[in-house]
Image 1 (spheres, helix red, strand yellow):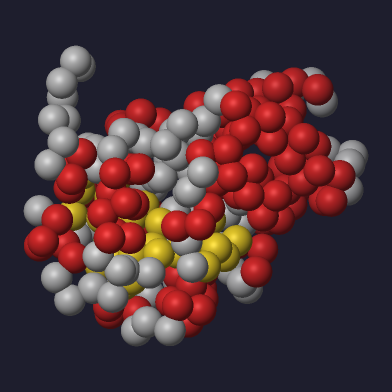
Image 2 (cartoon, rainbow, N blue to C red):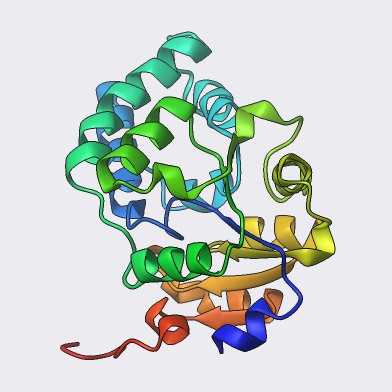
Length: 226
């Protein structure tokens, strides 16, 4: 499968949360804790509602929907403080992702990250995992006009890498991100994640490929010990 999906590709782009690192559990816990401070329960439609939004767009959404008295910058600062230690100490790479990054580097393929997160959090998790040097470009949602499913962020990364969109391969874990990659004219691989497993059929239908683990690409023994 590795040879098939990389055929004709000159760059590989990744979403971060739920795609490259196993962190979606953390954001759900932060949402529950943060809203609880203001007397709100975390509504069941929240994750779907904010899917693909940039860090700033999400803060605006929270402020307006839940009438949070803090400023947008204060909300973002609170979330950064709440997440930073978890990113540094509790968030691992997705299974087989490290080996896949090594293989892409061995093949000389440039790599980029297109994430809705703030830069400080991205640096924290990539630094703790020792993989920051793998990426020739890291672009956050706050650096483009519109968050996913707009193609803006993926087009921006491709521009930085000086690679045509049609020669880019994207890895994503949620429909908004998959749509963003496809709208950018890129080939998209949907990645399984526990927090979007109930919509895996939708993800597989939207994407060009679907994987349950990066081990499927590196020849690892996916399923061993499950």
